[in-house]
Amino acid sequence: MSRQTSRILTAISLIALFVFLRWAEGNLDPYLRRILNLIAINVIWAVTFNLIYGYTGQFSLGHAGFIAIGAYTTALLTLPLAQKEQNFFLTPLIWPLSNIHIPFLPSLILGALLAGIAGILIGIPSLQLRGDYMALVTLGFAEVIRVISMNLQSITNGSLGLKGIPGYTNLLWSWGCAAFTIFIVRMLANSSYGRAFKAIREDEIAAETMGVSIFYHKLMAFAIAALFAGLGGGLFANLISTIDPNVFTYILSYQVVTVVVLGGVGSITGNVLGSAIYVSLFELLRPFDQPMTFGSITIPGRPGLRMVMLSIIFLLVILFYRRGLMGSNEFSWRWLLSKFQPLFERARQEG
Image 1 (cartoon, rainbow, N blue to C red):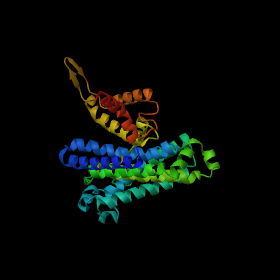
Image 2 (spheres, rainbow, N blue to C red):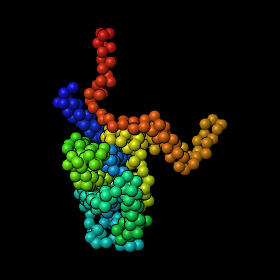
Image 3 (spheres, rainbow, N blue to C red):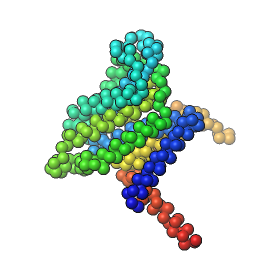
């Protein structure tokens, strides 16, 4: 298959996706739309974490912190002034945030930029470390952001959180941002920067010997991942309409890691597949938290039981697919058509 044919098929697929999203936004019920939005947001988080871990080989647990920065920034900038007064009834919101209300897109951009700046500031010291030490430092950063958001009442409203955030996030916004994130990361992966990232992942000493600036490329990957994580955080805040510090605990970082490992480390296709499976199972297993009756047998519901079931499923997947469902492989039209080649051959012979 030629490259031009592949591009044509990709363009047709994107048009079909856009048409479906337009239809789904007006015809699907809010519950299904919410699930599709959450899948897209998880795709953004997984792809950005994959840039740090899958391509550069740096294990970070600070994603929840960057997501929180993007979420709070976007929420504060998009909240109507009257709603701000209702939220900050104990401690007034500081100026100029108390008098600012700007559209959704500039708010998303500013939230992403602040998260990217935080990524640079945190990356400078933490990228001097490796392995478990880097994971601990970045995990500590995420917890520091959460604790600050809990105590900085004049900005984040503390443990009360922010309520009544406008629901600007829809399928076109979430999947459009997910597609943009995938495009940027894919372009980076296929460029000289991507080859440098992979060289660092395989052997830092050999990469440095070949002239690769280790710290520069690590910091670039870290900052870009933080920026897009903040973008996903902004979409998330304007989807769920209520945020507080407990939304951005270390569990959120572990969730991102789980999605990446499930789909396949180093595979963007795996990130998309893992996000879809995780969010779907999270909703499909919800009945396990409630009592269930099968004939004469009643199973008492236990809050959190679906997380146990989810963990068992992921454990089985990792046992049989140690590198994740996709490994490091990517989707291609050539691969898809090769799966249908035997059917075409059989139909031609029978015809």
